[in-house]
Image (tube, rainbow, N blue to C red):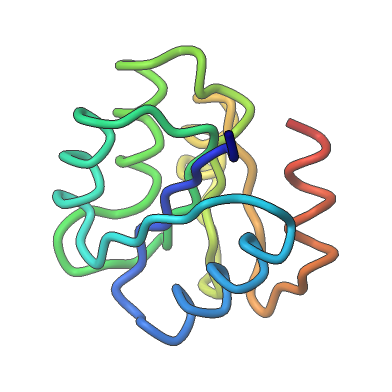
Length: 119
């Protein structure tokens, strides 16, 4: 059975690129366009990893990562914040303390593969 990854991103183009890359690596992928929808998906299904955008209209990605790490410590190390925006030190602290990694846009398939191999 393939491992399943959740992508939370309000930009359908970014979510699609992430999905194509991850599926090409052998993962099954679900996409949520809102942070709240992603949190709900995590309550009903087990995921191997989470990729979330940082800046979204309802929940910021660092908050999502913190909530997921608190609810499911097994996810630590497989939580990824995707951003092209500057990352404030407190956001970086929240992500790393939650066992997450920050991936800068633009990313490549190799970037994602390297991040997953570190996890």
